[in-house]
Each structure stands twice: as structure tokens, then as C-alpha cells.
Length: 477
Image (cartoon, rainbow, N blue to C red; front, side, top):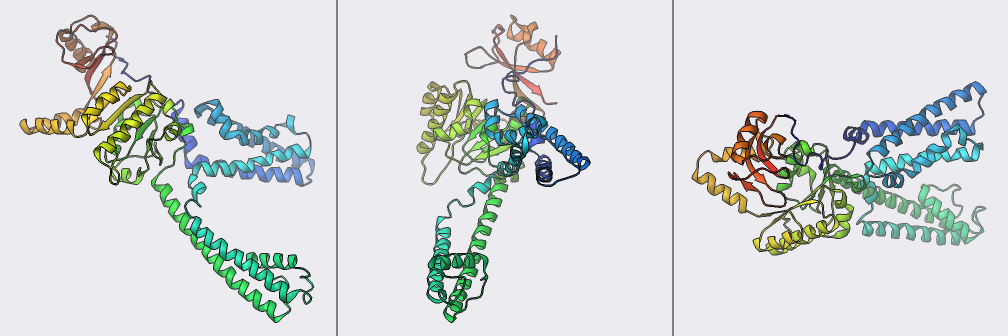
């Protein structure tokens, strides 16, 4: 017998192409190195365009630019390889492509076109934004604070303009009209100094008041932005923001509870999902809590939005995902029926967006399971049912708990796995196939899942068909 057996779902759930390359591109070393090279290329472009150099030095600069061009082309090629699609790559990196093209000698037609190479500066901003997406939310929910600061600044400018116009027109050579007074007030507030000291006593008093306002506004702006930055940095450290456009063949977990850590850990231990990324979709998702439970979160990202909304699920890329799990997520004043209603809505929406996805859902009330099954949800778990039955079994039989703990996690010595039936057992009786699979593969067969039928545990009289899936106890290596 060929001992290389294809595990079920091994091919369907393989994650992205070039997972190792993606991890390298996402590393901090790659990002920092790229930004340094971009800055170097910008400096060389400025030197080449704006400084007249001897021919030998100009040739050295151009050669260095050519080397950087090659590096940037390789970088863009790598990003294209790991992108979900060519269209998403072009949408994300069009600035980088525009910046690279004029670097080729064939495009070096005059200095004006060569200035396009300075577009590479924007690559620094886009790279920084992709890595630190919290910057885009710095001013989110801070309208009141910035409204107060803006009011103080506007009052100071208007007060200064009126005061300087009143006292300095006709006295100062610099202020000859109210417009001059306005600009003097504005620049004095922003710079904290007055280019030409006011001549009149009234002007000096007005300038003193402007300085007092300037110190106050500066302190408020600095304090507010510092508080926001600290808050968002902490938030970013706790929750790695998602970029769903780059996700493909990933796992979507909707809802957040203690089970999310167990789910994520088991997915990452399974060989079929070893390179798949996990997206948590929940307003309550917290990677810090998962880290405290010992979960490695480098392949887990967060979409902190309501998972019952279709727009959110589309953003989560469920059309490209291979598996979706909906957890019963508690909330303030939510009854179990409210929780189940959210689960059902999310599950049916996911199945509508992607009928081929494998969806599992957790609910409280068993009567809703039929609705989910009719909607295409493959597996429905009733909250507390499995744990209750397990508790009953281990209460009756001492030592049985170790068996279930061993089988239900890849962290232990064995696990449950579906495999395709080896050619040698097709057409044989289940009882006869047990010995062959155990002797040749080292697996213990415990069940058969015929095509489009429920799993049959230990079906002694079943004849194995080529379309069957065989459930085995697989020793974890």
C-alpha cells in the first residue's frame, strides 16, 4: 500500500501561494529596509536632477539608481506573487509602479519626466500606512476636543487681527490694512513670535494676549494628540488591524469569546491550515487576551466591526475564505435568543456570499438548528450540549476524560482526521478494512462518511466506496 495518503481537505484548504515569501514581506526588517532604500533613491534622484555633476560622478549616481530600480522591481514582483489578484495588486501599488517606470533609461526623456520618480516618496507614506493603520484613525471620535481647540485658535486670530488693526495701522510700517493685521495675527499665533515688535502700547498688549493664547493652544494640541497617539498605539499593539484585500483561502471567526483562543490554536496546529491566516470579525476582539492564553497571534488579524452586517462580511473576504465559524457572542442586555438571531443572520449571509464555504455555527436554542441547516450551514453546535454529554460520560467512567482530551486536540498524541480511502480497501467490508489501514498506515479507523450523508460511526456492514471519507485516529507526528 502506498503510505502517502492524501488527508481530506488537504488540497482544498491550502492557504496562499508562497506563504514563506508573504511572512518575509510582512516582517519589520523588510519594511524598514524598504523605507531606507526609498529614501536613498529619493536623495539620488534629487542629486541627479538638481545638481550638475561631472560625467564620471553622474554615471555612478545613475548606476546606483539602476541598482535600486532592480531592487524595487523585485519587491513589486514579490508583492504581486503574494497578492490575492492582479487587480488588487494594481489597486494597492499603482503609485509604486508609476514611480518605478521613469527609472528605466528608455523613459528618461528630459528632467520633467524624471521628476515623476519622486512619486517614490509617496511609497513611504503608503508603506507606513499599511503597517500602522491606526494613523488613519487618530482623529476618530475626537471632534469635541478639536472643536474646542479650533474655537480658541479662531478667537485668538480674530482678536489679534482686530486689535492690531486698531492700534498698529498708521503706526507700524508693516501693517497698513486690516488684511495685513489678519496675516500678522495668524503668523504670530502659529510661530509664537512677532517679526517686527509692535510699536504702540495697545499693539504690545494685543501681542502679549496672542502669545498667551498661542501657548494654551499649543499645549492643548500637543496634549490631545499625545493622548490619542498613546491610545491608538496601545490599541494597535493589542489588535493587529486587518487588510482583508490581501487575504485569500483564510479562516473567518465571527464573534469573540474564550473559545476563540482554542479555535485559533487548533487551526494553526492542523497541517491542512498551517499557512492559512485567521481573521477575527468582532467589535470585542482582543488579541492581547489571546496572547495571555498562549496563542501565537502573528497569523491572526482583527476586523473590529459588527459581523452581522453584509458590508462587514464582504470586507472580511468571505467569498475567498475556506472556513467560517460563528461563535455565540454575548453583549449587554442580549438574551440567548438575541444571540442566536445574530448567529443565524451572520451564518446565512456568509452562505449567501459564498455557498462553497464550510460554515460552523454555535447556538443556544436547538430549534434554530433546522433553519441553519436549510440555509446551507454544514455544522451546528448547541451551546453546552457536547460539554454536558462529555461530563456525563466521564462521570460514569473514570479515566475517560484523557481519551477525549487526546483526540480533540493536536497538542496531544492523537487526533481525528478524515482521509480518502486507499485503493486497497475500496470495495471491502468495513471490518476487513480496519486491519489493513491499521497494519499499513498505523491509523485506527472509527467511522465512514458516505458522500452527501451523515457520518456513520463503526458501521460494521458498510462496503467502502471510492467517494467515502474515512474517519481515522491519526497519531500526531
